[in-house]
Amino acid sequence: MRRSGSRFLTRDGENQHVDRTTVLTTDRARLTTWRPSDLTDLHVLHSDPETMRRIRPGRPETLDETRARLTAYLDGAGGEGTKWRVESHAGSFLGRAGFGGDAGCRELGYTLLPQAWGRGLATEIAVALVAWHRDHPLPEPPGELTAYAALDNPASCRVLAKAGLTPVGEVEHNGWRSAYFRL
Image 1 (tube, rainbow, N blue to C red):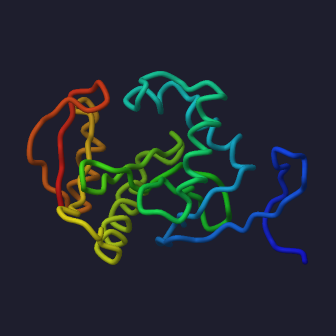
Image 2: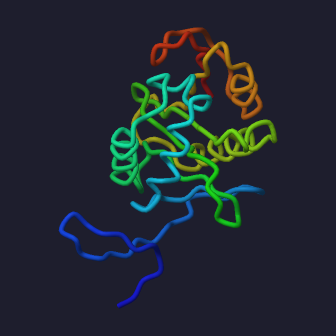
């Protein structure tokens, strides 16, 4: 039986098809599940020095580090603690966004390619993620939504505020002095 999706080789060399599922849609983008064939796109994002400047580890990732990250995203493809692929409606890769875990809470996060910066896309995606969080609450308390933004990244702080999160303090997060936000 033929399924739609991209072709990739499994570890044993067998051809497989993987369907991409749309998790949510905004006016200009959609967040989807990952495919193993997304490694190149993700590595372009994670090997860009300017993009990675405020993201752990604070430097461009190696291909092996990106491969490990993609494997983690694939393993959490339907779960509540994963980042999804962000693409334009035409299918062009724009970045990643979604959630991580934060001590019983869900942590909102996003990383976009530099060419997507400054156009309101991060805010649009963050607003959609806040709505998704409300529609898919965590089963265990406290179940709140949190986020962090490096203090030297005021644009990201503005995005989180526009998405409805409130800054509640400053903390050290992944090696960066950061504003801590809660919904």
